[in-house]
Length: 147
Image (cartoon, rainbow, N blue to C red; front, side, top):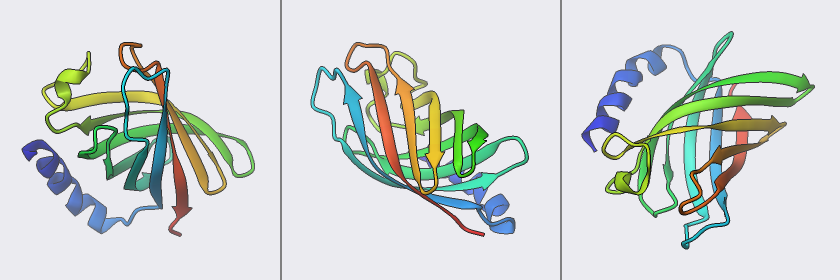
């Protein structure tokens, strides 16, 4: 758990100087064609800084193996209608003691990529998987502007 602490410590001075633009509350997930019982209630909280091109997020969530996972990510969104955005994201999440469950990991650090959408205060993210334990994951929750 030293890596997440270092990442969060490095981000704190930056985040304290310029407050986040958005807070998001992760509620749950759905694992498609799952080969095992995953935890589908995944509470979490994320702070997002919206830049001119990319959004940057940091937060923690209870992962599908019931452990707490810190996460950092970058996203790119396009507004397709008023209050409706779609985009893509990439990030790194720490899955304590679970990194060996993933085909792609650096120890317990797991890269995540996917598509995302937000309509008003509801967001969803679709993460593809390798099909070994699940075909993909749909994560969803609520998000609120802090301006």
